[in-house]
Image (cartoon, rainbow, N blue to C red):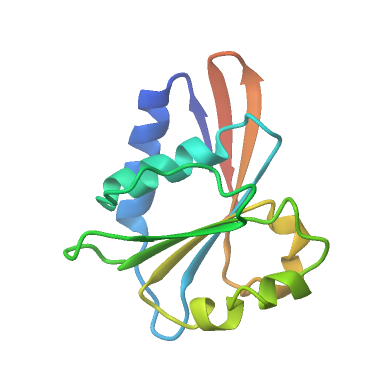
Length: 146
């Protein structure tokens, strides 16, 4: 599936629809792997997911802290939004030190990973992959692997 966003409002609408289709799993967290260059819309998409999950905190890129955890509204399918930016990791063993096995083992978690190619060997087989592409100043293309 390919979605072309011509504005933040388009991306917000896409995020809302995407989230409505997600269901928590029985034994593992739901993991979204967001690939794309800097400025392609990965963090903006995550901010809109958080908005739809009614996260009260401001969502900013976790580039320097690597991981941020947020509580979702009590009436949501997911109870926690975990936002990871693996850009600064040297290899996947560093993700293991961030309690990866614990957070991925909880079905109430929605985990969003930016720069997932750095930890691909730790991603669950059913990870949902989204690729973000900068088309021009006003347009982004989002590809969802099916």
